[in-house]
Structure formats: structure tokens, C-alpha cells
Image (cartoon, rainbow, N blue to C red; front, side, top):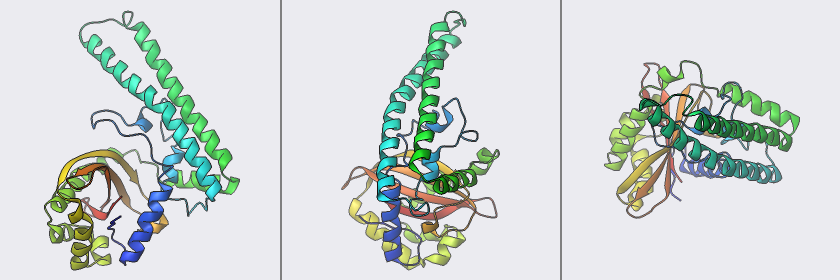
Length: 282
């Protein structure tokens, strides 16, 4: 596996990516819907600011939480089971919402749509129950100290009320970085990266390492954003200071390899512009 990341040495880069790959295995959620549809955390009855997504907060922090192999296995089972419960609920709810919206715009009254509205409420209730169940089971899988630490991590990563304004331009910035990488314009991608990125890896080193990771894959054949996660703190292994960060994960297809996950981290700098802070391939 070729990996590229703005760490002091390539050895540290590979070690970090390996750790992230193992700890993210249990923390990743279901595949994201198209960009115009809500992601799972925003679809439940209880919003993340009231009942946080603990699995998301654990993402990349297995070492920080000092999880044992047994705990990793237990947590992986919990998240997989909950994900399998939630995916069909979410799929049906999306389909049902579209049908309700179409009929409402066509003149249907609440009485006509009553049965469908009741079913939609039931689906969201079941999703909320699965969320609560996962919270309870995650808590029982951790020690009291680990659980308290997880709550603090979740609180620190909570998206602020003005997140929509803060996030403006982040996805476009990531798309521009990927466009440069797709065109093998590696020095340009370095020149437009964040200050912390450029101070941690030299331009020529970045160009060499990212070429080593990207060139064997061939030309990009397709790419879809899987998830976008805002946080103010990243796992300690990333060794990045507190700030405004988004982690974007893309499901990508290349001419020589399908099923590639591209992970891109962007940081919002003092001028309010989002710039590259990290990139690696799984």
C-alpha cells in the first residue's frame, strides 16, 4: 500500500496510515448518500450536538483511548451490527421522503399522506433507537475512564453552530487539490498547501512521495465523496495543532486499481481559506 502524508518522514507516514486504517475499521459509518441528501448523523431524531456519534469520535483514536485487542473486536462487532440495522432504515426513509415530497408538491393533503407520514416517523424512531443502543453498548465495552475520555473527545470534535459558514469552500479546496494531483501537478499542489504542510515536507519530497503513490494507480476513472467530517482536533498520531479541520474520504476508481480510498485533510487558515493539510491513500 502506497501512502502519502505530511509527516516528517516516510516511515512515520506509513506507520500513521497503518494505525488509522486499523482504528477506522470499526468507526466508519455507512456509505454516504449523494451530496444533496442528508448523511446519517443528521437524519436521526436526536441531533449529534445532543447525542454525539461515539463511533465517529473514536475514529483514529484507538491508541489514544488505549483500546485492547478485545475491545477493538467488540467495538467492531457493535458498529457493524448497528450499521446493518441502520442502512435499510435510512434507504427506505429517503425513498419515502421523496415520494411524500412529490405528492405534497402535487397537492396532496396531510390526511392523504397520513399513512406514509406515520411510517416515516416509525423509521426515524427505529433509527434513533439503534443510535441509543449503540451508545449503550459502546459505553459497556469501555472502562469508565475510557468512556469519559471518549465523551471529552466527542465534545471537542463537536461541530459549532457556525460550522456551515466555516466549512464554506472546504470541499471546493479539496477538489482543487485532487485536480492538481490527477494532472500530476505535484509542485503546484504543494505551493497551494497550508503553511503547516509546507513546513513539514519539502516540495521535492512531496512530489516524489505522492508520485510514488499515485502513478502506479493510473488515471482516475471516477471519484465520489463518501464522507466529510469537521473537527477542531485530530488524533495525536497526525501531530497537527488544534484548528478547523475537515477530513474528506473519497471512494475512487483508477485505471489500474479499483476501490481506492483517498483521505484528504484540509485546514482553515487564518485568512479563512481552506488548504491541504494531509493526504494519504488506502
